[in-house]
Image: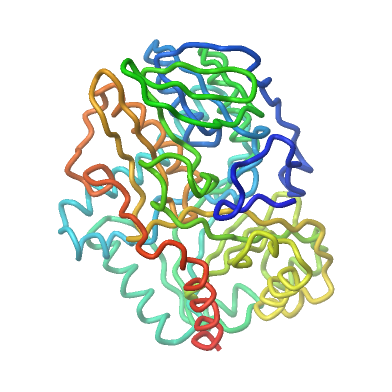
Length: 444
């Protein structure tokens, strides 16, 4: 059985962990399930990066906090993503933000995005987190000559307006570095990657050490508003809380709570990991050291060289959850790799999995809080697949908004408005299917 946010009633504790490379190389310490009634000042629903980071922030402030999650640690996005550490979130570039809201807003948003990476690296150092953090070049690759010009012009603008250093490459430059097909230029910036499941495990360790109460395999069955807060029903106990932070992101059920219902579109992304590449293959392809890539296609492919010489390769998944792991999807993604790197034809696919990405209607995430000091409810979601660093920053900001701390600029679009509601939400999947068909034609 597969969890599908637009079909399943909720994440069941009985669902097994996915067969990811991350789960095969690291065993998490999953906290126990809630077994009795309890009361808390702050309740966090969702135990991924957002929720665990919010728990850390609240606990660091000396607040009473309980966190619950419906399944095991790392069941959701925290155990399924590619581990890319990027400065940004959503699908809007700084240039697009500048065009829509002005340069000062774009620079303030850049500070939030860069602050997310700084938060991650400072926590790694402060708490001695073991997450296999590895720095290396990040290449943005153009799949058409037109995209090469657009990409390089955008990089130059980013460097001039936002002081983001980059190196541009033409088609010949790329061919000298990599044995890769259908690439017409690119841009290299500083990048980093990590082991995403280890990151979740370390966040949980830190939260527990700060006396946050964590309960996994504990789904929230219902949320009832009370005069003095909220009552949340779980399978084995009721939780009374003054404030609620919803941090379930793409794994939020279709009908859960009015504040988040129809506010995001869960879309599948799929990833596979190859067997370790031989020294000959690594030399032939140029994939011989830690590095990461993303292309300019409408439905982007992304990949990285892992520390043990394997290649991780990802892209869009199936429309429906039930088709996420079928042979057709595996072959489609494998052929995309071969189209780029013909030398890898025949390389064994040893791991394959799919997971959900939260897409906002306007391509921008939100960190939103509603209510007053007596009882607040808030959420952070809509990262559009760029959440390894930003999700934890969003969790921190969500907790700070609950506490009225952090000197947050609430005029920024991240904070000012809630996520827009999807119109005709029942047709989201139909529209996605049409978009995928169009992408096949447009990207030939």
